[in-house]
Image (cartoon, rainbow, N blue to C red; front, side, top):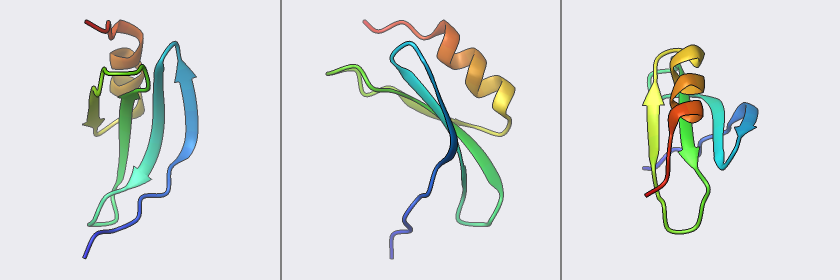
Length: 61
């Protein structure tokens, strides 16, 4: 059964949004996802600093 993610503390850096959510084991994870049309890039990180750095350095093709 799929779990519904609830993101909190969402921040936008250019076209990339960074948010915090709980994974299936209850741990905090941070995700960075590009919202530009046709990009589709996203990644999970264990800490917020890594997700913020990825959002600042992401470049769409």
